[in-house]
Length: 308
Image (cartoon, rainbow, N blue to C red; front, side, top):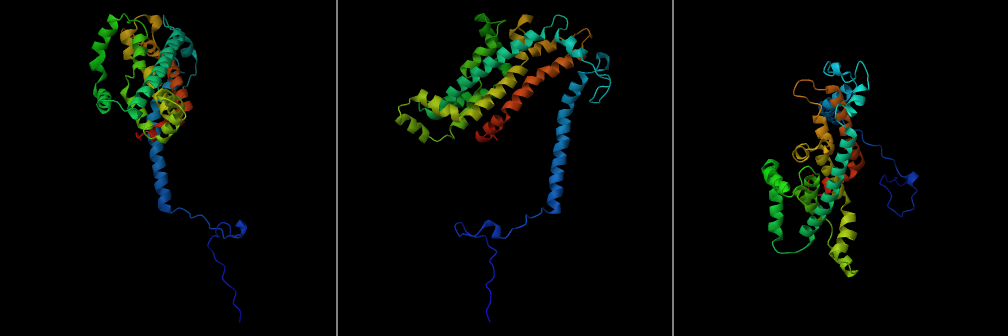
């Protein structure tokens, strides 16, 4: 009596000549009921947290479309009486000129981004790749500046900028960015550059590149995630800064958006909250747009620089 050999259910190795259609199909394993419950519970908690975080922002956007006398009349998100008067009135409310304020904020933010990216990248390359005396000590001192509260340095900085006749100009808000004064971004880029293989530097040296060539041709292209993270955080910090412009910008023509928003609040009790909410909604639009454009670089930069 002859017996037929049993068909093996193991997948055929590569190069065996077995057609993929002849291989047995393994049905995907269905998740257990407990796993489904846990996943649904996590998503429900995240949705609740997201709703709590986004509610004030969404309420402000909704209040910007309500008439001024109904700004605080309800906790609902959608206005009952929809109007665009707050945007028309707020753009040129009294002596305020938000066209100029947005331009001033964009100029200061752009200069701050360029200064932080260039200076912090150069300082980070020096700490991560160059070997010079007291390198570890200097890097420790740079990190120690993170422990100093901003309020401690306000008076010395103001005295210095006053002696330089920089008060009522954008120089105190932009020039320090070109001197690698933000230790956090220096540390972030140092951590990222240390992950790059040094063999790339050695190969560039064999091709005749010096330190500047290695920095521009090797380090900068490979450090785009860290550079994007630095640019985004710098933009958010500079755009939202209120204390710095309040100290150094006395002329209303040089005000930023944050100082312009403060112009809606009147100590006599006649504050215009409708136009305030409208201009605040426009003020956060550049931040949201900048984040949507650079969120991929932001996530990758934070994840690969040891800060996750």
